[in-house]
Each structure stands twice: as structure tokens, then as C-alpha cells.
Length: 302
Figure 1 (tube, one colour):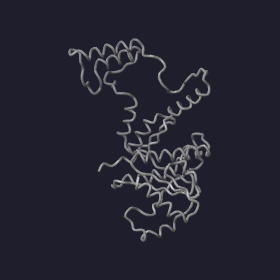
Figure 2 (cartoon, rainbow, N blue to C red):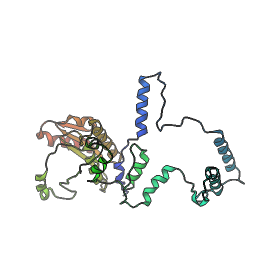
Figure 3 (tube, rainbow, N blue to C red):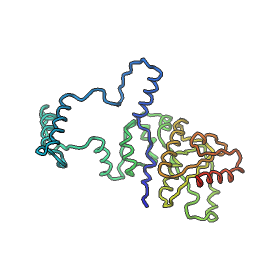
Figure 4 (tube, one colour):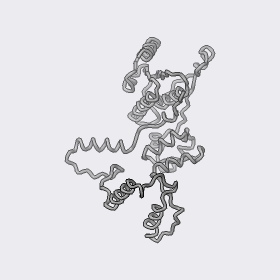
């Protein structure tokens, strides 16, 4: 059986450029006649120069002629291209560089992402925010995302951020997921663990669902169901309500995309209806068994 890389569940689809485009489109919808000057990292604004297009045309012509056709080149790049880079990009500006110092790659993103593959997992790598999601995703999928660091808050304070700003942007409080019953354990042997269950003020719903989905992803069963029972709406530290709800929705989408069915049951918490279409709200604990069975029936008979 092929198992999924559970690190994919950590990848959060929140590309900065996509957010910028949405805001720009909303602005243009309201202000039709506005002359908008974009200074973000959006699409290109000018065509290729004649020198570039002429060179590309000559290269295409070479590839169509058996006498000048070129297949796979050397790993470090074709010598004629390396020599041209040394001559026009460096020697023209009185910079001394040897051809062995020039390496032709496929693009900066691919090479930057590749750095994570040659570095040890114990290295700590800082990624600027905002940034292209390519770099974040590559590090997450590559098993290099770090857990909570107790020294993070002190380090962030040194940057000039206030404690309020830090709590609104970062997880500085450890998140511990308690497993009261593992797969294969008999309930009557672990029922005593339930006595240690305590209610708290926050509900990190998105993170908790991802944690549970990671456990499910490691199972070999063909059918997997994540049944979520909560008495609170998504809430983490001082994060705005919109962010925590958005994160929970994205978590559900990623989990279901990985092949895990999700069902929610809210106890006096109507907000679960805004998270997923397969949700039920009860106002009495006595209704819990019947509501839970109805949810499972809907999933298993779909």
C-alpha cells in the first residue's frame, strides 16, 4: 500500500500574491476608472527586448537543424554560455571570475528549494514573511518544519515586536495533544485516562485536526474517518477570529483531499456549521450518542 507523506497536511495554501490579486480585483470592481499603479511582485509589465527574442529565434533554428542540434548538455552548462556570462556579465565591469565559478541552473527557485535537501534536519532556517509558498512547501514536505520553540518569544521580542503582536502572529505557547485511547487499545483498560481530561479556554481546532489526520495517514485501512466533537469555535491565542476559522476550513480541505472523511459535531456551538457541510449541532449532552451515530451513518452509507 502506498502511504501519503503526512507533511503535505502542513502545507497551508495561502500564497501572498494570490491575496494581493484578490484585493486588487476587489478595488477595481469598486473603482472602475482608477489608474492603478502596481508595485507588487505581480506579472511582467514589459515585453522581451529584441535582443532576447532574436537570440531565442536563432536557438530554435539551431535545434531544427541536424548539424547544429544539441541534446542534453554538460551538468555545469554549455561552455559557450559560460564564456558569454564571464565576458559580458563580469569582465565588462572589470570583475575577475574564472569559468569554473559559473554554474548554469534551471532557475533560482529550484536551487534554493534544493538547499534543504543537502542540509541536516537539525539546521534552523528562517524564511521571510511574506514569501512565495514554494519555499515554505518545500521545507514542510521535506520534513524540516520545527515544533514549538520555548525561546521563540524572547527571540521575537529582540526584533522590536510587542508581546501582543507576537501572540497574534506566532505560536509561542506549546500545543500538546493528549491521546486518551490509541488504536488497538481496549476502552475498559484505558478508561481511567478520561479522569485527566480538563477543559481549557482555547480551541486550536485546525491544528488539532491536522494532528489527528497525521495519525490517520499512518494507518493502513482503506477507509478513514475523522470525527470531530467540539464545544468551542476555533480560537488560538490572540489570533483574529477570521484567521482561525480560515485555518480550520483549509485544514479540513487538505484532510479530505488526502482521502480522509471529516464530520463535525458541535455541542452548543453553531459555528461548526460554517466550517463544513457535514456538521451537526446539539444543545444537550443527552443528544450526543444519537447525533454521533447519525453522522457516522451518513458517512459510511454515502
